Image 1: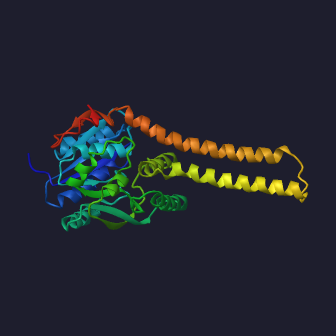
Image 2: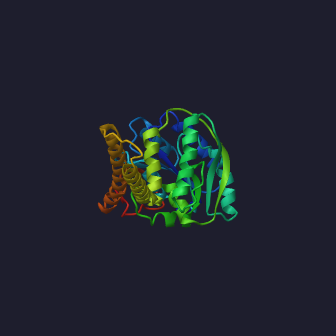
Image 3: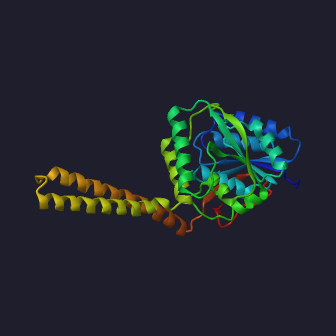
Length: 323
């Protein structure tokens, strides 16, 4: 089998409206490089015609390959599966919605050939996105970098090129709740960026609504920081000091008859609800971490493959998959 130089990993979930254009542009860009390549699509439980269209691409071009999940396992898991099977010297991750332009892949390869191990796409503008999404993304990355000791660049998604040694290092990390862009930053290696303007979706609708974005954000924070657990210590100390000062004030006021304080339920209930709210918030944070521990210790495979189409030059990691 011919040695593969570049592997493209493309997660797909209900993208029938755009997938033909995606395949056309990806194959056009890669053909222009004049080096051996493969495109690995991961059908992440699509319920539309995406699966049949992807199979037709495989039949027409042996360099196009397909992994089909038994159900929807999620975007980050789909990326991991593609890396498990990617045989190239460099692996390029790109979404199927064409918001990340395939045309800058040659620039990424050029930086890789200069000696960088990770080349990520950095968005200098976001077309077609609301002010709320842009602002919330900016605030999230600021929060994430304050909470963690890992330098995770802002305005960067999963669109990136990684060297094979980075892929191999990444695939030794067994955790289930994966935040791939954070894991790659955590690994280190020589990293740089290529700037681009993020385009609106070519067609179809976003597969990352607010609920999934929040879930991904929580995964990012809880994967790389335990500082939220320390919030309880800070709140407890602060409230204890506040309570002590308040009791001291009440004692002095009673002693010197400075203030006439009428008993009432409103103030008491306000204080109680405030404290109970803090307790429930901290229990929720603790529960999030315990839930992640529960997911890890069950030992289930990260994903299940129901079908493989095409000839793969590399087999997936057995401890990670089931097929």
